[in-house]
Length: 213
Ligand SMILES: O=C([C@H](O)CO)[C@H](O)[C@H](O)COP(=O)(O)O
Image (tube, rainbow, N blue to C red; front, side, top):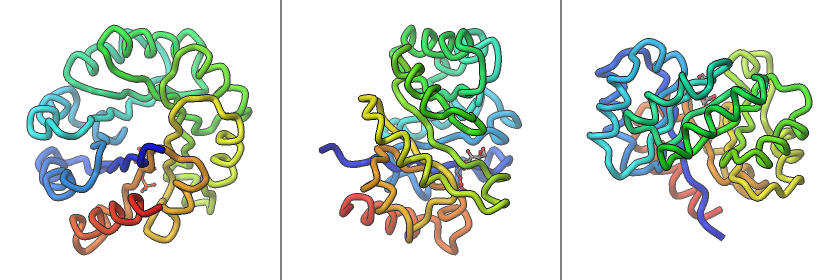
């Protein structure tokens, strides 16, 4: 079985800090994620910069698109995004538009199940419609209210949809191996890396844990 990928969520608003953090963690992670607040603040220029500075990492742009899927996602794919996210609560046509834009650019679309009520149904339909990645996601606000992504991961993994499953929501060194063993093929880490005394050391430790899981 292929090793799980590690995705680092770059959630700063500051352009230069984002590049500096990416420089520290890039050797240890597979995917550099431009978080939603960060992409809204910095825009396409940051995608172009990360893509050129980190050719060995995939770039995920966490657009969380809600409408006008193809129109919104296309410039980000053209700027170098390997993966863009679209909300699972959006219209089927919106998700379809992002999937279409991804395919036109030899890239991938991720359906984010954040705040979706019937997650199994949305994930099943999205996979059938060509989404390459399903994102099980407990957002920062839901985390603050004590929620975790683990029960949702169990539900989605049990469907055996044949697509990759990304998991985000407060993962850290204590939970990352169980998350991989439960079926995550992409594990997303934000605060546990950028909030550490040494983000590079934290990313290195997580890499070793994921590779050993
Ligand atoms: O996607 C995220 C959030 O919704 C803000 O955009 C986070 O980047 C994601 O949850 C990963 O960060 P942590 O939960 O801090 O690991």
